[in-house]
Image 1 (tube, rainbow, N blue to C red):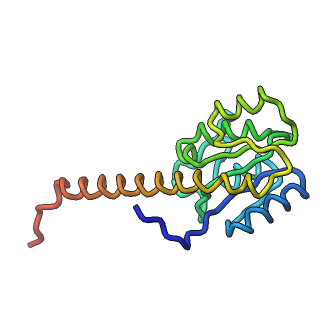
Image 2: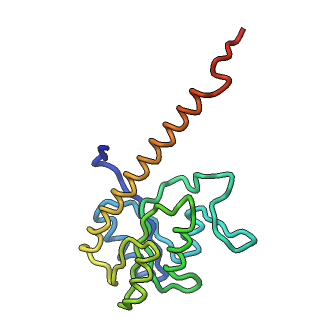
Length: 177
């Protein structure tokens, strides 16, 4: 599977600190990533199209699998934020059948091994210590490529499934008179 060199990856950056958001955004843009930055986990969920229902669970709307116009290839989020932590955001993403394959990276200014291990065990691809460095951003590329390959494979499977359904459709052999 050839991946075009001119592909621009879209990263959703989530941090309640304006300075940290600006820093991560600037670092990501130096690697030609398209960046959307929000200041809370709840705004990230809203951007991703996850809505809270009456039973306080998050899921994409039933009517729409396309939860936004722009595909997000990676989410990078601060751990400590008011309201909902980055860990909580990670869990919501991994619980969603529509978003679970998006790589999530957690960042924190606190080096707490139990926190780091818990995030990695719950599905975070990486855990960066703040301030995020250029060397950290370089570590994102393999996760982005892996998610893109997974997307291409899913698309291929869906196309094959659609072709199979069309070829076995009962109306296929009916001719108009």
